[in-house]
Image (cartoon, rainbow, N blue to C red; front, top):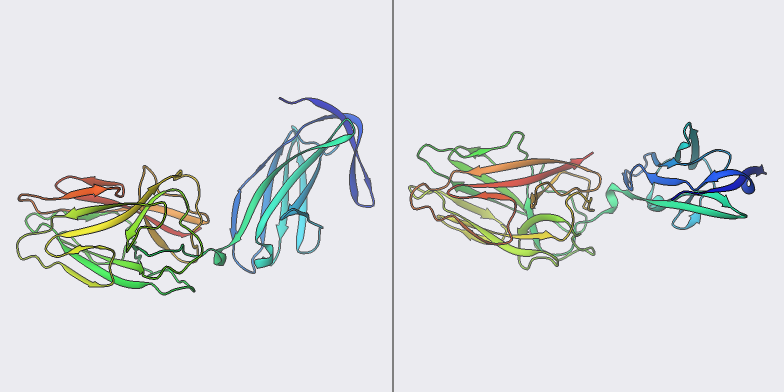
Length: 334
């Protein structure tokens, strides 16, 4: 509920003060983006949109990690009051560095019978380079570009070739498809990025997505597996290098770690330097801060005779019957 107070603004030595005298309405502020990601050395603009604001009775200021920002050539605040009591309030930051990473608060003040009422909201600024891969052992699908770079550890790599149904083969895949590995209508090859050391300080964030299991699932995930009944006749399956947990013989079993303790629409923090994959676990791909996501898929035409496809536990979003279809989420920097 809104109400009116009497106030006006006077300016003395470059500072603004709220004084009783005119009618004002308690304003509303909303950040355009609550999470902003930038590159080191670039320029970035943080913006809040205001409603019920007026140049006569509203003062806007910014804080960084709780301290009021003094305007300089590095931090430039721009206030634009628009018709119909609307406004756009921006903070321009030049040559962004690690010192600028943190929480920025946009604040609107209005007088209320001698005291200042305030509304505020927070924008979180991060660098692409500042987010690390979470702690634990696990694996993710490898994109064409290779495993994402990490300064804390080195990914191990491996690949898996599955011979699918040879008689009237119908294996298929999405277009585009950024998964590394040759794909044929009777053969599908996948490559994996495998983290074999527990290095890392952060935990996997809450959300709705899956990764491959390697050792114990990280905290917050639940385990599951899928069995592919691969081609029986002249089967030439091949497993090489370091792979996720599984069984790799004439048939294939892969183990997964999945979680559904958050909304897929709420962005999570993961490294943003290079492209990577997660596996889909709900009706939509998990949103990742600073990344553009594309849904992709693989379809295995499995053995036709006495098919023994099966699954157990928590698994990725999939089609499971005589054939198997898995959904992947490909991430690249916006």
